[in-house]
Image (tube, rainbow, N blue to C red):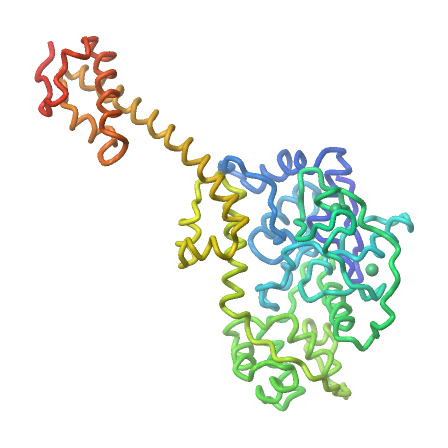
Length: 438
Ligand SMILES: [Zn+2]
Ligand SMILES: [Zn+2]
């Protein structure tokens, strides 16, 4: 498909979800149809598509987890390319801790969108906006926006049925506009430095060939040894983390978060290329800057649980309704009451969806029971036997389920159908059956 990837080279690469939206626009179809016709067959290759599978509402399409892998494969196929990993954070999988690396919801710079449009350039949404640590646009010195100025709605997913690139996912309005830069924002601001660093990082992976950035533990050890005399404690103090965390990052117990490297770059002057591609710090006499970083511990368990809960509820809502609140609670080892207390709105929606599913499922099971009974009786008739009610019930999967009166009448009717006898001729209390039927 003849759609160019936005911002190739220079760290301003397009995010994969934005590219997908533009492909749908090029084909002049709603995004929903593009997803159904072209993406789903590849995502679910050889597997049955779960019923009621809606549009993917999560943001990890541009991240570094499994759904990013699947989407890269799908989009590479659709576009006959092989390099679309660069439009996600996948190249950085061994380098940065995946947790909270990508924003779950959209953020955008209204001025960038406005400029793309007025310059006649490709209008797209850069991958950098998807990185959780990025809060400002370094090109325009404005805060990224995440709520639509027209309808006021935030928490915007990557996709909607009729979504267009650069537009609100809720009201559909164009989000680009002229905004005044925030003069208070200086180049030395941590937020500005961080946003520029992320673009510097993305420029390294925004290449046609496969890149292999240096793995997290190796990068951390190099920084510690070159700039902090091999001391985890010194490095921890300078970068505002706990010494034990540096020990673990250096040992490779878990990958270090992106912000650790950004802070390291700020205080040591090492470039992203040095940290992640060359590890060559020779000849550097970095001016070490100091900055009072607030200590970031790992995400408190409570906060992580809330995130997981929202995620699970979201997934369940995209599904066929088979998951109940209890099911979600069990999967997180919490009580259903906690689910209700924490996420009342989502829980209410899921409860409704599950109730509708349960009614249908109950009916399906009843129909199944009825046809089991008929099939079983036909088999019995062919063998010349007539089983009793309890036996029929057990053979047909009714034991311990459904109301007895209902089952009794189903069995009576099925016997009449199969054996052609008047129902009253059967003794319902007869558990041994009626013996041989000629
Ligand atoms: Zn901008
Ligand atoms: Zn809106």
